[in-house]
Length: 401
Ligand code: AHG
Ligand code: MN
Ligand code: MN
Image (cartoon, rainbow, N blue to C red; front, side, top):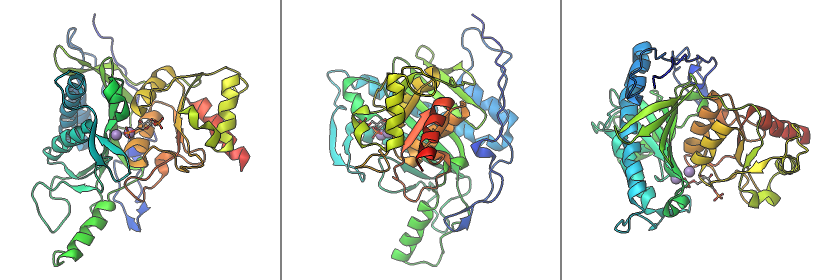
C-alpha cells in the first residue's frame, strides 16, 4: 500500500523557540533557535520502504540547516536503540548472561541491573563518537560526564561539541528479567558556552572548575532542542520531537530501519485511563488522592468511570497514554515528597514529547518543563497526559491552596 501524503503541521511556542537570554545558575544562556523548526512533508514515499528515520532527519536538516548536526546525533541514537533492542531480546535466551543484578548500587541507592550498565555504555559510546557532544548526564552515572574527544583542557567543549545529552538508558529495568516492556529516554540540549575553565588552574582547582561547568550544563526542559524515546515491546518504537509535533517510527526488522508509522501524533484531549502505582495512594497529596478517587468511581469532571493500566515502565506507560489518552503519573508522597521520577532525563524529555502531542505535564502546581534542575538526579512529582484530565488535577491543587 502506498503511504498517504503526510501533511505535517507546524506548532508554535515550542520548547526550542525560547528566544530571550534566560538567567540560570546566575549566568546568561545564549539564545536557541528563534523560531520553531520547519517540519518536512513527504509527498513522495517509496511503497515498500516508507519514510525512514534517516530520511526524516535529512529532510529536517534540508529545511532547517541550523539543525543539520542533529542528523549525526540521531544517526547514533538510531544505532544505539537497535543495539539495545537486540540486547534486550537476546537477554531472554538461556545462554544469556545479561539478566539480573550487576551487584552495584548507583548513586541514587538503586540496585543496577546488568543491562542498566551495558545499555548505558552502548549509548555513551554511540554519542561520544559523534564528536558533537561535550557533556552527558545519565541515570547510571554519578555526575555529568565530560565527553571531550580531543582532550583539550582549556575549555570544557571543543570545537564542534555543541550539545549536551541527558538519558535514561534502560527505563523500567525492573521489567527486563520478565521480558516486559522497557525503554530508553533521551534529551538533547545545546550547551552553554559561557562556562570556561581557567587555563592557569592547578590540580583540585581545575577539577572544581570542571565539576562546576559540568553541573552548569543542566537546563530546564523549555530549552530542550530534541527529545526522544525508544520503546522495546512487541515492536521497537522510536518517538521524537524537535519542537514541531511528535513523530513515531516503528522498527522494520527485515530492513533494519525505523519507519515513520504515526506522524504528528495528538493525544486525545479526554480519557478514562489512569496509570499510577495506586498502591501508594494513601500517601499522596490530598488533591491528587481525591481526583483519583473521583475518577475511580465516575464522579470526576467528565463523569466517566476510569480504569487502570500500569506497566511500571514510564516509557511504556507514556507511549500507551499518547496513543489511547489517559493520565500517567508518579506523584509525591509522604515518604518521597518529590516522587520517584528524575527531572532531567525522565521528566523533562517525556514532558516535551507530551506537550508537543497536545497534552500537559505538571507537578500539580508547576509545569514540569519550567523547572530548573539543581542537581543531576533531582526527582520531580509528575502527572502527564490528556489535557482536560491533567487540567482537572491542576485545578484540584489550585483549589486546595
Ligand atoms: P528506572 O527503571 O529507569 O529506574 O525507572 C523506573 C521508573 C519508571 O519507569 C516507572 O514509571 C517507575 O519507576 C515505576 O516505579 P514503581 O515500581 O514504584 O511503580
Ligand atoms: Mn527510568
Ligand atoms: Mn533506568
